[in-house]
Amino acid sequence: METIVQNIQGVPLNHYILFCSVIFTIGVIGVLIRRNVIIIMMSVELMLNSVNLLLAAFSAYSGDSAGQVFVFFVMALAAAEVAVGLAIIVMVYRNTRSVDINALNRLRW
Amino acid sequence: MSVFYFVAFLSIFFALMTIFTKNPVHSVLYLVITFFTFTVHYILLNAQFLAVVNFIVYMGAIMVLFLFVLMLLNLNKDTEPLKSNLVKFMSVIAGMCLLVTLAGSFRVLESSEPIVLKNPDIGLVSNLGKVLFSDFLLPFEISSILLLTAMVGAVLLAKNDPKKI
Image (cartoon, rainbow over all chains, first blue to last red; front, side, top):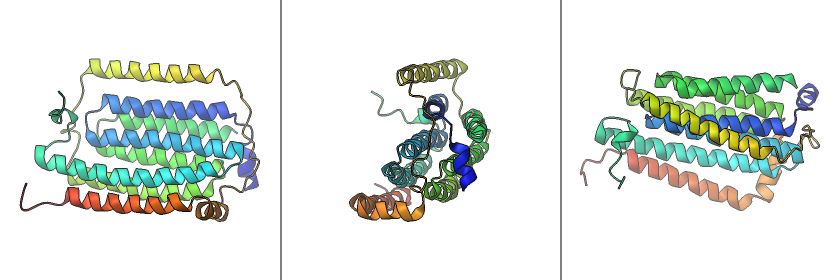
C-alpha cells in the first residue's frame, strides 16, 4: 500500500480537475452526436463517473471522507436511474420498433 | 505519479472510442474498459471501498444490464441510426467550447498544489462504514427506499401488459 500512496503523491489537483472535465466533455459530445438512446444513456453514465472521480479526488485532497460517502450515494442513484431508463427504452422499443431518439418527437411542440 | 497520466490517457482514449464506435456492442465493451480504468484511479487515490463498489456495481451490474438490453433488442451496426456529418461536426465544436470554457475558468484557481494524502485511511471499508452508519444514516436508509422505488418502477414499466390501456 505504501507504494500506491507514494505513487499518487505529487499529482496536482488541477490535473484531476482537467482530466475529469475532459471526460465530462466527452460524455456531453456523446449525448449530442448519437441517436441511439442506449448510447446516450451510456454517455450520461460517463458524465456521472467523471463527477464521481472528481469527488473522490477532492475527498482525498482535503482528508474528509464525506466526499467518498457522497460518491457511494451517487452510485446508488445511477443504478436506479439505469434500471428505470432501460425499462423505458424497452417499452419504447416495443411500441416504435426502434431506439432512434428522433422517433420520440411527439412532445416537441 | 506517471501511473496517473498513463491511466488518464487510457481513460480518455477508451471514452472517445465509446462514443465514436459505430457498433453499439463494441461501444458497451469500450465503456466497460473505461470503467475499469476508473477503478484503477480509485485504487491510486487509496479509496479501496469505492474501487470495489465501482468494480462490482458499474462493471458488474450496470454494464451487464446495458449489454443485456442491447442484445434483447437485437441491435447491431446495420440498425444503428446515425446523425448527419454537419450535426456531428457542430456537436463536437459545441463540446470543445464547453471544455475551453471550463479550462479557462479553472485558470483562476491557480492552486496547483499536489495531492498529499493527509489521512490515507479514509477510503478503507471500516472507516467509511463508521461514517456511513453514524453521520449519514438517514440518507443511507432513504437511498434504500429509492432503490426499492426504482425496482418497482422498472418492473411496472417493462411488464408486458395483456390488457392494453
